Amino acid sequence: MSPAEEEKSLPLPQRWPRASKFALSACAAAVAELVTFPLDLTKTRLQIQGEAAVHRDGAASGQAAPYRGMLRTAAGIVQEEGLGKLWQGATPAIYRHIVYSGVRMVAYEHLRDSVLCRAEDKTFPLWKAVVGGMSAGAIGQFFASPTDLVKVQMQTEGKRKLEGKPLRFRGVHHAFLKILSEGGIRGLWAGWVPNVQRAALVNMGDLTTYDTVKHFLLLNTPLVDNSVTHSVSRGLLYKSSMDCLIQTVQGEGFMSLYKGFIPTWMRMAPWSLVFWLTYEQIRRICGVSSF
Image (tube, rainbow, N blue to C red; front, side, top):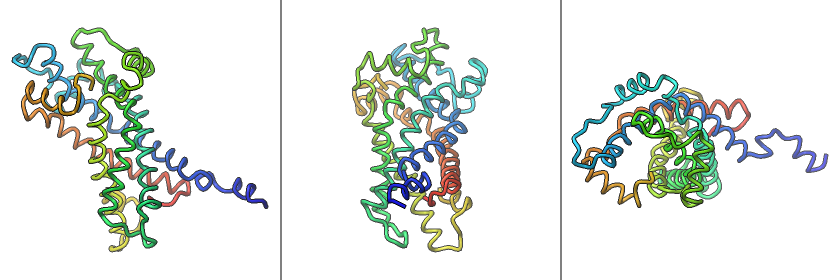
């Protein structure tokens, strides 16, 4: 058998390992996104309602925000817009995670195994895991920035409807084309700097923690590589991130910087759990080695 024929006889994950891992991580991210998306929408509504009031009525306005807290926000969306609206913007969010999670997972494994050189016994120093996690997160978010922008713009459409404003987009593709026509290619990356900074920190906590804790448990405890171990491990209004910080504090107060913290935290925990459990099982089913 010739080398070419031998290569064709190999399973798909062995022939195209990176493409296969990209597809598997994208599938796992899509599942996690659908399960936890209502929390993301709730978080976004909490964050935009204050700044929308400030830009509409001025910082001195004493008008109360329409929603107070995560549960009341979610209940208000269901009562005023319908249950299905809790998944408004889910399509661009899934698009975003296909790019973001696919790139970050492939990038991290490549950095870990080929650039930062994990040892044969699978030990990996914490500082290398931090560098790999932050780098992979930043790379993934940079590539996903256009889809992230479209996702947030689509999520605000329900808010505009309640305020009596005309809807700007007919759908995901219309939103993408409109942003592109108004801001050009650069417009699709509006706000990418703070998003990349955040993604780097998030993945220092997500990828770094999961990889480090998982392999520590496998090497130092009786636990085996299964679901139990996987579970245990687990805007255009501003000129820049600094301008956003200043305007937010001036218009809404210092504590507004932490608005949406609880739903953000409550979403990230189940999202990571669903993602890692799904991802590890999909890899195993498809014959790809464990992460």
